[in-house]
Length: 429
Image 1 (cartoon, rainbow, N blue to C red):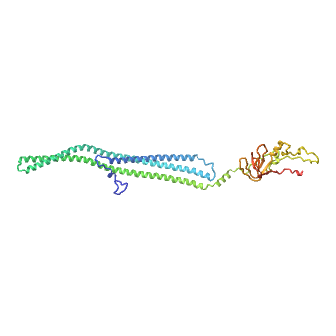
Image 2 (cartoon, helix red, strand yellow):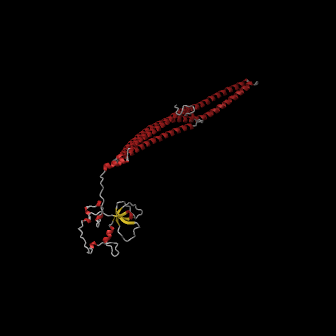
Image 3 (cartoon, rainbow, N blue to C red):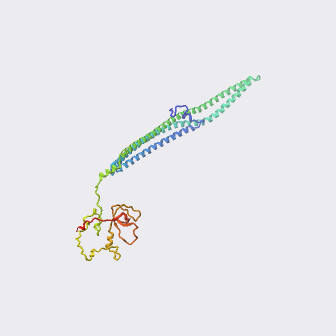
């Protein structure tokens, strides 16, 4: 018998630890059989685990392969694009790793399933054989015990009769007055009781030996069955231990290869530089460095108000005819009359308001808006002074302007009136 646990004498074997003092008892064998049944169930559970694990690994492998197949790596360039493509390739490799793990788990499942079936058959043969002798033992014991009780009683009675006959014979033999005829009768009775006693003893011994032989055969089969079950149980434990060890090896191998795939991606990511990727995109897709010209604002009444850098021939002021000198004493021409919107006796005309609203201001220093009705302006920008309308006065130190279709206030010390350079010097005419 194989000693699975230890060769030390302190360890008990199945054949030493599962007996019952009752000749008809089977508690020890029942516990061993339950252990065999539980062990078979554990094997079945591990088989189901391996089967489901193989299925899960296969499904995960297919999911990763589909994920990699759906991934499009064409839209990214530079180091990041290379990292993205490597990640896709390594995902395919990881899918192959899990596919290999699924195959390994499937092989372990088939191997353990076959082992469990073989053990089931062996255990069934041993259990049937031992239970056959248990049944025989119980049947013979039930049948022989009644016979033995009767034979034993007869045997005891014959022994008592022999003892009484022997006492009477000895008493008559010792008496002086005993006749020879009475002594002969006492001796014959003694001899007959002795023969009956011996015959009852033989029958009693025979019945006991028959039952004992049945017990011995059962005991031998029980001991052999215990040893065989112990060997099978040791083999089962060793097999399951080896199987679980192989499971951890499969997991470790998959994790190792998985980490190698991740490390390959990390090595590419270490070379990915943000600036290089930006420059790579610019050099590959640049369209030009020249920006569009600013959109000009053409003042119908004051074309000279446009800054020189945005003037075009279409908005240049027309050439004026030579001015005639005004002789002394000539009344001023209506065309030469100066109209002022500050004249208390005259009303402002529409042209006066338009001229006022077309006054341009240039920003001399930056200003950031503080309230919702203020504007943020930058130095050098041109602003249009907003026309006067009935309403609240501008806050002290502020001027109302229009900039980029927005109207608001800016400090007066941040702007000054814009004076364009004339295209024609009238002093030379």
